[in-house]
Length: 419
Image 1 (cartoon, rainbow, N blue to C red):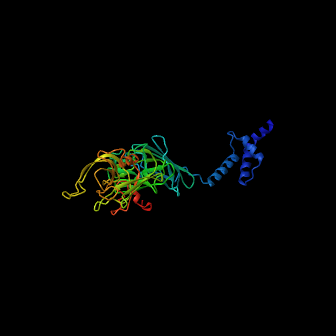
Image 2 (cartoon, helix red, strand yellow; image 1 turned 90 degrees about the vertical axis):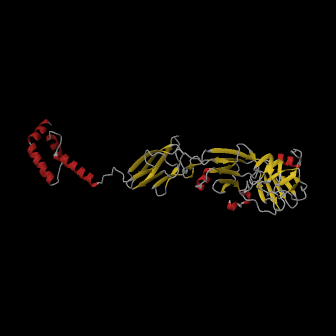
Image 3 (cartoon, rainbow, N blue to C red; image 1 turned 180 degrees about the vertical axis):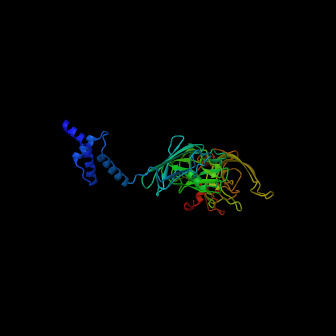
């Protein structure tokens, strides 16, 4: 073996020439490769270099995959933005590709729900608005047509309101109300974005009853179901207005949950022609009470009204009702006063009229027999004790107009299709 190696070394020059001629015509034998390898002091040979060149040529024939994505991701608001509005400002979009994932996280660690559009070009939150006075982080990823990914991130903070709408309602937590109860929400400042406020207030019923809102002007929003509530229903008012811009620069806060229940059903029907009030409880008549209603020119409102306050003893005067010197002036301390309208319609105790049960002689209220100072054993006293806020009082056979739906809690006079 050693002699062979020696001969190879001695003939190396001629052999290399022979190899070159062999490569020139494209014929390279296994023995020649061995010889070339044995004669190369650096372990390289023309044969090996030729193979490397062939591999390089093959590589250059295959296009290299791009390392920079053609997709460009944009996030609004920009990184470091401050005093951002909680609604409508957050948007993620892409050019030259499609979004694959977008994650928005609040400072409480909770992820903001959102969705990529069907075409993959945009993303927006589905919750409607972010929280005020909060910091958010956005991470977005997209890919181009070649599958190369691009990412972007941003961090921003939302504004802290300097003005609020001054929101209030007529619900007390845990209170029981009658089947005619209407939730009425009032605002100290006119509401411009009514749709946003409607989305920010929901009324949830334990039996799944659908409850809808109805605007009366710019500062009042009432909620009721299609029909009177079912006794025993548990209801919760969810107010989520802290981050809702009710008007330019004005926000609704604070957020609040208010639970209440629906008690027994009591619906009283006042027949002004018969001068009687029939009381039904849970669908069964329990009492018929003589009454007096509004006389001509002071007719009691017709339609359905709802007890909005149990005022007890109250003072009533003719100021704003009758003109001075008309002979209809009065100034009375009235017992067992149950308010039905904002304009001053009551069911109340009456100890001065001789018209109870036989004629209509009041200035618009519904009078029930009582004694001066009031007595719990009188007809008025017993009715007062059996009544709660939210009970229904319907007036029929009135010669006057139907009560306006915004006068008190009289929204039941609006058809459901118009509510």
